Length: 85
Image 1 (cartoon, rainbow, N blue to C red):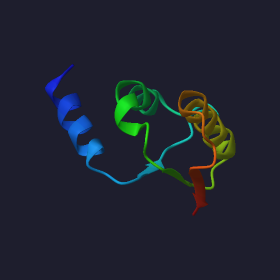
Image 2: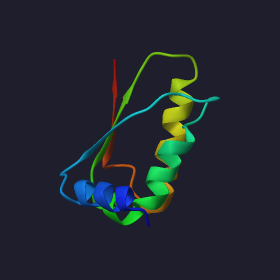
Image 3: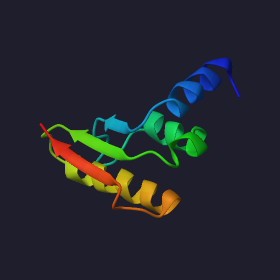
Image 4: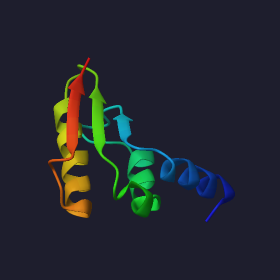
């Protein structure tokens, strides 16, 4: 694991919750967010998650895709919240 990933993992372990602000990319979420979910799985596992979305075509599809991904990994939809701007 790269040094920057270890530093990032340490920072995530110290947080109480996660707010995901993400762009829509081809009606889904982007590769950097997927990498973050995959690499920091253990650090994200116990955190409440909220989504901040912009009102762009397809954004609801992207939010649904990442919500389903996290629910599949962690088995909980109830701890996730969505907000809109």
